[in-house]
Image (cartoon, rainbow, N blue to C red; front, side, top):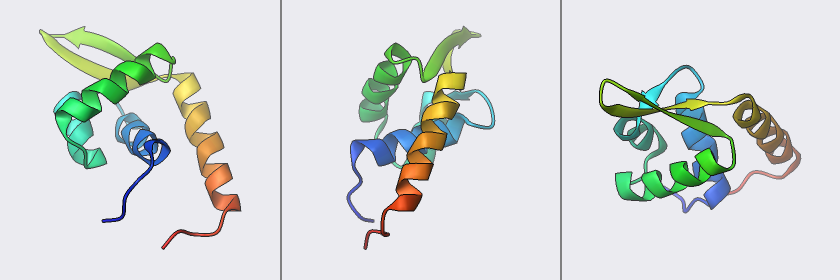
Length: 86
């Protein structure tokens, strides 16, 4: 697997929650990152308003916000303008 920049990891996290609420372990597994690193990034995304943190049944779950969908769209359009990385 190639090294990914922070933006690629954020894209993977937002993609993981795009279809519905998920817990941290499921998100990190989808994104391919350790849970401790994912937790720090998700806290940042909550502060930026891209994710919202909800407590359900004593479990923290995350959901994407409209601003998160907007970020994902902008990132993908920028990515499509650049040559592919190898």
